[in-house]
Length: 247
Image (cartoon, rainbow, N blue to C red; front, side):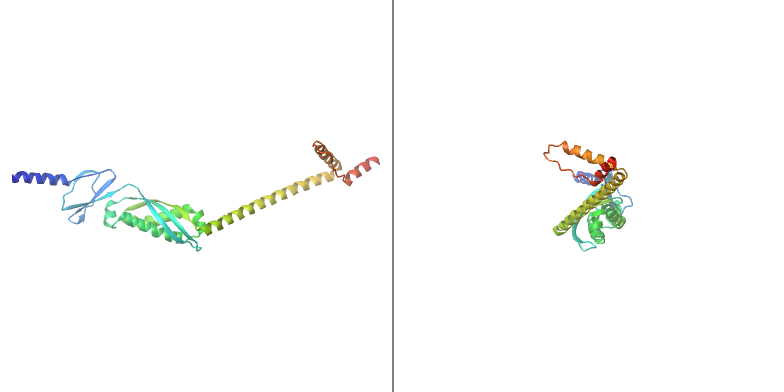
């Protein structure tokens, strides 16, 4: 009876030693407290407790949402900035040995780096040069997490939350800028129109008959409308033309 019991215990033990890991998983094996050089997986393999202890690590890309951070920019504007970090574990062994919790450590590193980088730039730079700031965040966080066997592939600033007073001030600034551009465009149009009128006046001064024809054309245009009274100015230059013809 004891023989069958021993056989049953051995079968259960061997059954418990069998481990199966998915394609994106790796197992870091600690044998008598020392980590094996090569992690196990994917597929089926044996782990012999209590001699062996396994730490399961996922190699899939992780999307880490950085909570909104209250930050004061270089020009003393208080903003809330949120970001997202994309990273994956490249070395399962180092991610288990070098840091206690790789995901939590990466999250804390991303938060502190976000506060540091955004605090060194002005608000206009934060809003207009988002790609440059993203690249800088990615480079700093990647260098800090590289000893942990983690590769940060991308960092994106999701949104920048401004105070209501700053939003109203920026709206007034944008409105003033649009009005300035409209006035500049109108002034340029007036300047170009004045140049054309000056050129036309020079040509008419050289040919007095051209001025006469222009007035007659204007009279035809006015007479085509349904007006009962037409007030038409008669220039003195036109009278000079008729007087020269009488002579």
